[in-house]
Amino acid sequence: MLFKLLKKSSNVTIDEKKRKRMISNRESARRSRMRRQKNIEDLINEKAELEEKINDDYHKCREKWQILLVLESENEVLRDKKMGLISYLKFLNQILVDYKETEDSNHVIFKFLKTF
Image (cartoon, rainbow, N blue to C red; front, top):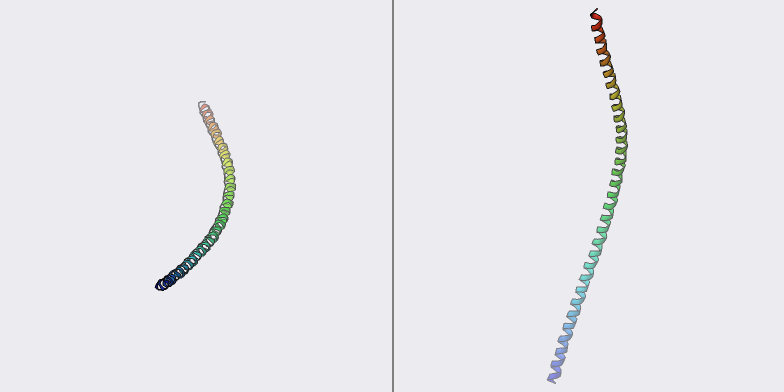
C-alpha cells in the first residue's frame, strides 16, 4: 500500500513536471514564432527601403545621363567653334604676314626711290 502511494505520488510529480515542461515548450515555441514573425517584418521593411533606394538611384542615374548627353552635345558645338576660330586665326595671321611682306617691300622700294 505504501508502495502504491509512493508510486501514485511519484506519478503526480512526473505529471506535474510534464505539464510544466509542456507549458515551457509552448511558451518557447510562441517566442520563437514571434521572433520569426518580427524577422519577416524586418526583412519586408528592408526590402521596401531597398526598392525605394533603387528607384531613387535609377532616377538620379537617368538625370545624370541626360545631363551627360547635353554636355556632350554642347562640347561638340564648342569643339566646332574652336576649329572655326583656329581657322580664322590662321587666316588673320596670314593677312598679317602678307601685310608685313608688303610693307617691307614698300619700304625697300621707297628706299630705292630715295636714292634717285
